Image (tube, rainbow, N blue to C red; front, side):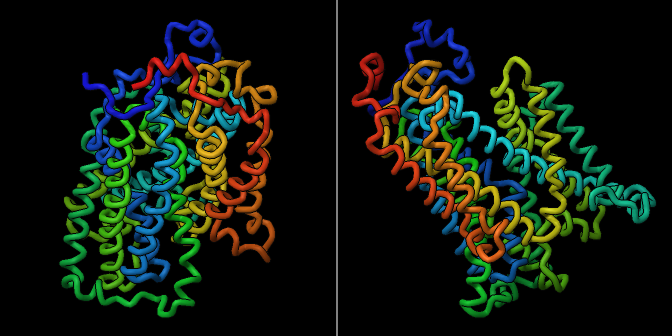
Length: 501
């Protein structure tokens, strides 16, 4: 097998029993052996193509049109946001490639061997939110489909509602939720069959929708000439900051756990080029399709429709409607389980492995996904952009700041792999927790989201990710620079130098 060509690629000595017998070590979180790091540039480009071709990406673009932007303003906001978030993604990708470690283990470097559970759980809760959103999208597709084939389905229950959800919507939501839980409890083998064609299916669906939209709107002319509702710079700036923060926040989770993927890279060059091509280009192209379709609905129906479920429900051809909803259901199911259940299920399980199994972790994910009430977030584009994306970006931005500052400025990319798996080592700090990281995290989140509780400071929330990132970065650096207990090592450990390539 071809060996990595990059220098400073390290692996752990698997014969060291002090590590392999540690309670902080198992086969899943162990560094990937160099011979198993086989991902090339194409693999990382393809990874981002697969992740970006999802319905929430389409809805993200459409939501900007619904907020009043024209196509130029929306495309500019999306492209700029993805170029910004690409920076922390690439910075956090480096340790995954260099040391072969995943995100929970990497976060031990800055938060401590036990404190690392804090960022892992924060990320897990956000994944639960995304799980709920995708479940609601899939359930909505089932609801419209049932309405088309079951007489009286739409009026079932009359005006009865559960937490703002009608009885038919609630039933289809729980049917879709139950299907996802069934897959988790019965195994992942069937899911693997979906994954290879789910993302292309979404892309085909988007192309079909776009072709229909352009034809129904009588060409590109009416779409490109649409002025939007934000005619002045002042009007545009009322929604731009929050929208940009949302674009950054959309991939805030991946900016943290990208080492989960780059630990399999052949070298830094492969992941750097692959991600730099895959993320911004794919997001821009797929988002442009969402913008075109949403702009077309304003011409066709007289109002912007940013949900593909609502658009497909307008189809007069029953077969076209069936195919469209089948695509949404399958895509939502496969993407949701792979991206938003497996990861948090593992995170919850890692908190108390003797008490929480992977299946129980999946159930916890599902329950939290319901409690978040995603139908309220998707009731209008402002809820999706301002409430959901901006809020969680203010939570994850500080986490990204701390681990980036620690790895690049404090540790200067030097890590003792062995000590990441020991209860008593460089990264034990104070009983397994790094107080400096926790202080910086709390202050960063408080600064980012203070506008949620202090109305006079509500404008800060529009910049939640940037404010949280900046505050936590500065605070952590000031607390850690020059500190004797910062977990720094002066040189790469000798036991790993002989394993470098």
